[in-house]
Length: 245
Image (cartoon, rainbow, N blue to C red):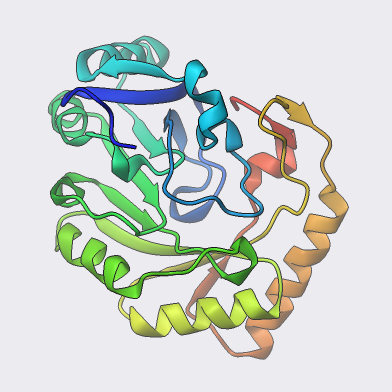
C-alpha cells in the first residue's frame, strides 16, 4: 500500500481550512491532507473513499512540493495546523512534507491506528494514536502500538483517542489506556450512521449519537475515570456526514 515512488504521496483529498472536529485539537483551524490507502477495514469506517481500493482511481499521486503548495494555497500562505489523516497516513512517505512544512511555520498532527510505525513520527507536533476497539472488527497488535509510541520518543505530543460504541469498546479503551498510563486519553461516541464511500452528504442519526455521548459521559463518571476527556465529533454535530468540512 506504500506509494510507488519514494517521494510520492497518495492523496485522497486536501481541504480546509476548517476546524478540527475531534480529539486533543478540537476546534482548532486546520487544513486536512487525507491520504489514500489503509491496512485496516473497520466495520464503521467513515472515510471509505480513502480506504477502499475500488476508489484508487480517485486518489492522486502527489510530490511533497505539490502537497505543500496546495496547503499554502488553502491557508493563504499563513501557517496553521495540518492534519495528516486517511486511511492510514503512516503508510505514506510523509517525513519530507513534515520537515519542509515546519520550516515554513506549519505544524503537523497525524492520526493513525498504531499498526505501522515511522521514524518521522518524532518530527510531528502531535501524534494521535487511535487503536480500534472490538466494534471495528479489527485486532490490535499491541507490540506495534508500543513501537509507534517509542518511535515518536519525546518529540511530539502523543495522545490516545478511542471511538466508543458500547461496553466492550469502553472496556477496551480502559485496558489500552492502562498500558499507556502516561498518555492523555480522549473518548468519543461512535457514529453508527457513517457515510457510504460515494456519499458526500449522507443522512446521519444525530440524536442517536448524542444519546451515546450522554451514555459515555455517565459511564466515565460512574467508573471514576477522571483522567479521560469525553468529547463529541464536533464536525458531525455541525455538518453531519458532509465531506470536506
